[in-house]
Image (cartoon, rainbow, N blue to C red):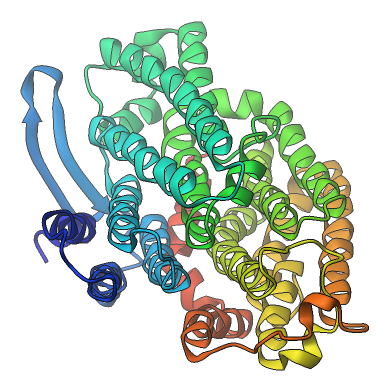
Length: 502
């Protein structure tokens, strides 16, 4: 167990290296090897879960080694309930995304290589506790994502890929400058040490309030672009819509959570006073993301763009919970605990439902020869009842139907936010209504009514497609009736966070 976290990160990279060094592998062998190395994350995460103590809120399985002594940089890894939840999510989404890409014909070895590289980089972000290696993992995730979009995406993939990279690198530049200024004063990049300095007031005393506020804004901008927080979201619809199905699944299921994770891992402990002061403005932006994201999705006729805008709407619930707690959570600890628990659970649940929806839209697109318009189908339920059943579960999970996983996270978020910022919760209900409208419209127009011309030869799911959907669909039911299976991992940690409120 001593190097478990390093093994988690670098096993997918080892698979990528193996694929890079064996160019003569057959496409089938490349796919099988990639899937096996991708599944390693789930296996190792299960091992970590089996030996994880949720009651201990400190980091577990820690690894720390000196790296660049002149900059006080260390290779520091650690796992807590938050990071374990996201490592489990990565272990689930990555193999299903590779299965969804199984029939890609253009250089499947390179596709698999890039995907494993992306998977390892995302794991590094969730496990690194020193800004220097964390930022390296953060930036390295852009490289394979860029090429996956550009080389295997749709007609507008080139522009979407460049827009994605320019936005995210631009935000990261501000974050890098902010941490350079932080290091110049505090003398460390370590998240644990910086959080301790922030908690005892030493960080503010060393830097000064105004300067620390500027540093906070730099870090905030870098994370806001990644989530994305409204109005930094304009890169997302094109990137998600143009990316190949497997890449879209990983982008929405895992990479969007990297930004929310940064809010919880960096902004929350390092800048509590600044986050509290900015909470009213940030809460307003989160509400805008919820409401405008839902209404933008309602206006789409391209099903993939509809799901992309829906992703903005659902991730904004997580941000709303965080900002509401930062603004007034000290006055209502029970509501703060509910909101933060809901935010973490919503991250996991949205990863399941959104990735499943992107896969379902990909099936519609493949079966119809490239069509994915809201009005291009009709009567799919009659032609493909198994597919309709699976897609219906994913749609109603995203809608927040009681009994499915999406309901529990959203309920906890609203339970908490209503006690902290009633105005924000009330306005955000408009987003709930709009979400119900466009998802039910999706269900009605695509699966019911007379069969469209594109559906006459529509085949039902094959064994590979069923195997791709079954794990996520099963979890939607399991977490809908037994959310404590996951909540127990991070609930003690969330309860401890509320004690540290500014």
